[in-house]
Amino acid sequence: VDGGKVAGILLESSIGQGGRVEHVVAGIGVNVGFTPQVAEMRYPGAALGGSVEAALERLAQALARRLAEWRHHGFEAVRTAWLAKAGPLGVAVDVRLADELVQGSFAGLDQEGALMLDTAAGPRRIVSGELLGRVT
Image (cartoon, rainbow, N blue to C red; front, side, top):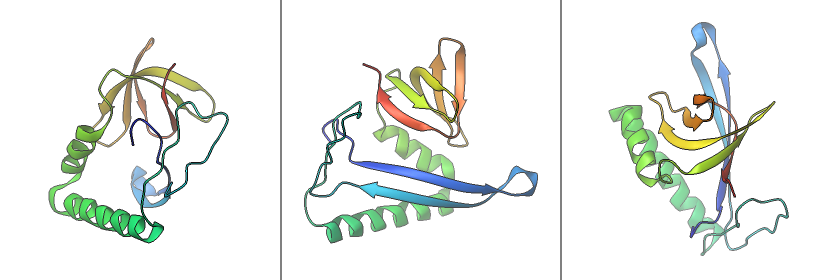
């Protein structure tokens, strides 16, 4: 909201035989009515207004709509909608991986939902990491 971080998402998955995802567990944190002050944040925090209950209801409805869209129209419809609301292509970002910090510019999402970055070493596909935001 207005350039501030309102939410964070942590996804954990289990990969079965043949490399197929068996399940995904999503943890979602949303600031509602309170903006935490964290010293090491690279961009300002922000919060949604209104009640926690109303925010949870809106979130649940939005998730249900996207899941139904995915079920009926496939991932490409969700990917297209996500990209329409994402930051502009080319914006500089850092992504913290388990063993390195990757710097590059946002190049979109691939057909499987992986984050694509243009880095100094060439294109990079990121399937898991912490998107830290704009490089200052």
